[in-house]
Amino acid sequence: MICHQRLLKILAYDTNTGEFIWRVSLNARGPVKEVAGCISMQQGRSARRVIGIDGRMYLAHRLAWFYVHGVWPKHQIDHINGYALDNRISNLREANNSQNHQNLKRARKDNKSSRLLGVSKNYAGRWRARIYFEGKEISLGTFSSAIKAYRAYLIAKKKFHPYGTL
Image (cartoon, rainbow, N blue to C red; front, side, top):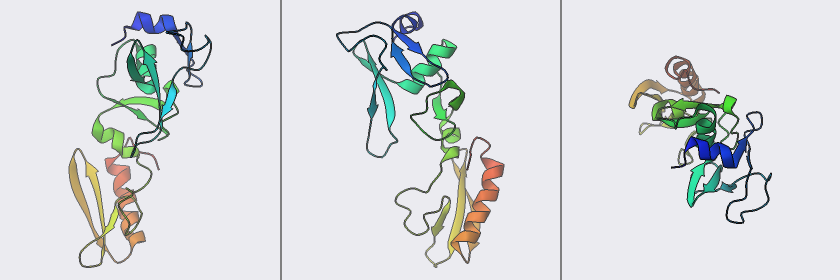
């Protein structure tokens, strides 16, 4: 892992834009004062900026946290606005896995029945609402319409997901 002093020496971080700029050229990687890193597109994940330093790849949002706070995050780094390329320090917060999933904006791609977050059709053809909190599923009931189930989900989201935004 890169040490904080080395990070500060080779990269500049703009807290207003979330961009890293090379202070020095590493291994003929390009001109100094260029934006560092590239966009990584992994299947099933949001696009993220990664930066290669000394033969190791780092996620830019984790580097931003380390750059500003001087310590590596103990947990995950959550993008508050849900946009994984927005690495401004004001958009980043340390979160456990449960907290990090609280700001999901849309249903999973395999939820073809309702396409609403927290809503699916049950075996009897009714609409089921559920939410996850601290690793446990909480059933919110079954409803005659997907919209009614989604309303129940939104009410529960305010209670159980203080980290979440919709």
